[in-house]
Structure formats: C-alpha cells, structure tokens
Length: 434
Image 1 (cartoon, rainbow, N blue to C red):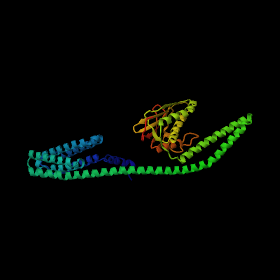
Image 2 (image 1 turned 90 degrees about the vertical axis):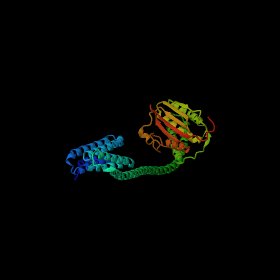
Image 3 (image 1 turned 30 degrees about the horizontal axis):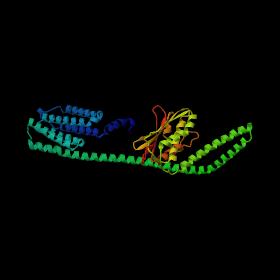
C-alpha cells in the first residue's frame, strides 16, 4: 500500500511536466542523453577514444540546467530552446569531429536533435536545423577525412530534414486542434454557467411570481377590513373629541395611534399591490429637470424637520424626454426616501441630473455611512429589507420602473462615505433643451 507521503515526490515530478515546454525539454534530454549513451557502446579507435562516461554525465547535467531555466523563466522559453538548439548542434559537431569526422557514428545524434526540436518549433525551424546539421556534418567530414562527398551530405540533410519537417507539420496541426478544443471547452463552460444562472433566475422568478400572487390576494383580502377599521377609528376619534375630559384625552391619543398604525398598514398594502400588478407606463414628453425640482420642493419640509439639507443640481442641457412622469417620480422618490432614512441623524442629500453621451443620468447622493457589503449583495432582492416597518419592495419597484424606461439602476459607495444611486435613462428623440 502506497501512502500519501510516498506519493508526494512523484506528484511533484508530474506537476513539473504538466506544461508542453517542460515535456519537450524532458523528451529532448532523454533522446540526446540516451542516444549518446547508446552510441558510446560502439568501440572507438584508440586515437579517437574519449571519456564517454563523463561526457554523458556532463551532458545530462547540462540538460537539467536547461529544464531548470525553463521552469524559472517561463516567458523566455522559446529563446532558451533556440539557444539550446544551437549549442546542441555545435556539441554534436565537436563530438563528430573528435571521433573520426566523416567516419564517426555520432552524426546519428543529429536525427533525434532535429526531429524533437521540430515538435516544438514547427517545420520551418526544423528545416533550418536540418540544413545547419548537414553543413556541420560536411565541415566535420572535410576537416577529418574520409570525405563523404556532396551526395552524401545532401542525402544526410534530406534524411535529417524530411522526418523533422513532417513532425513539425503534425505538431502544428495537433497544437491548433488542441487550442480549438480548449476554446470550445471555455465556451461550453461559459454556456453551462449562463444556463445555471438562467435556471436560478427562473426558480427565483417562479418563487416571486407565487409570492406576488399570494401578496396580491392577501392585500385584496386585507384592504377592505383596513378601510373599515380606519373609518370606524375616525368616527371614534370624533366621538372622543366631543366629550372632553382626562380619560377622553388618553382615549384620543390611543385612537390616534390606532389610525397611524392603520395608515402604515394601508401603505404597505398599497406597495404590495403596486409590485404585484405593475401598471403599464404611458410615455409623454416631459421635463426631467422640472420633475426633480418639484420632487425636491415636495420633500424639503420633511427633510428640514429631520435636520437634513437638500441640494438640487440640474443640467440645463438635459432635453425633454419621453417618460412616464408619475412612475419616474415614484422611482426617484423611493431613492430619496432611502437616502433620508440613511440620514436620520442629519446630513446632506443631493439630487442631480446630467447629460452623459447618449443618455441622461439622475444621481441621488447622501452623506450617510454607505451601504455595507452584506446588504449590498441583496440590495435589489424583493422583500429584503433592513427596516422594521419596511416591505423590501421599494428598490425592486424603482428598478422595475427604470427598466420599463429602457434604463439602468446602479449604485456606489463614496470614497469618504455615503452612497450614490445612479439612474441612467436613454436619450430618445430630444425636442428642445429645458
């Protein structure tokens, strides 16, 4: 039984051989060192004998050094291998020269050298290496007779180059096919991820549709009793006011509290109904700047009582736009209410409009604490809220309104605190400047 500890060295070795470049370096080292050791078994003439044992060891260490360089400098792999190819060709030439020139068998080392390099560099470098090997063989035979003749040099060059060029062409095609497969795998993985995301969105949509139908039914069932309670509480409040006294003053306060809670419940019901049966927008040419200024004037008294300051900065270049004034006002109002709730202890709120290319942006910014990460992940999720009396539908309705206008809703936290919501609406058929 092999333990995990015993497997670790082999796993490390295999991980080193994961990349093509390392596989190539390893195969070339095996081919050259193995070929050198095999040819060393052939007896040499006394005057041509060399210390092949030491030569094999030094050559193996040289190949280990090439492997290490490729591992340490992966971006320089091609340059390292080209330099190694030149050095290998020269080393084989020297070996042929020292062991008999034209009569040496070590010229056979040119075959694995050129062919294995063809696997990595392709057919053109293989052809150049074959021609270089043929020239070096001719030089060695000329320097150390017997001369093999130009016919022999030509045959050796063809024998060096022909299989190498074929290997290079096959390697290029195989590499291209593998890259295509990898690209298809990436595309397939992306398609699967999009499919899974679509399935999740579909499940969420089905749940939300079910919740929406349930909310609509509950809201309809609760609406009439709420109206009856409100009417009776109002009548009771009038009766209490007609009978002055300490007890009646206390009763009047209780009735007023009941009416406040009934009004809150009625507002929640209206919000559920608005979400469940979203009205179809009716687009007309309106002034967006005027809408923002009127909304700021509407909320300014409430903001002043909270100790808040409201700034309005409208861009005069914003043109008339086709919008549903009521729905868009509701969307921006929801954003303003959220900012005011974030500034419950005072601060400043800014409503801004500006042109941005082929779109108009409406920005609602505050000087609060910003939106924490755990809230940001679920910010636009229906029914998610951090408020005790909230429905979690305000931002969902807002985004739905903006999307009906063909726009987008986004947000960001400011570098020094606070949050900014950005409504981006497309510019369609501008008529005149505001």
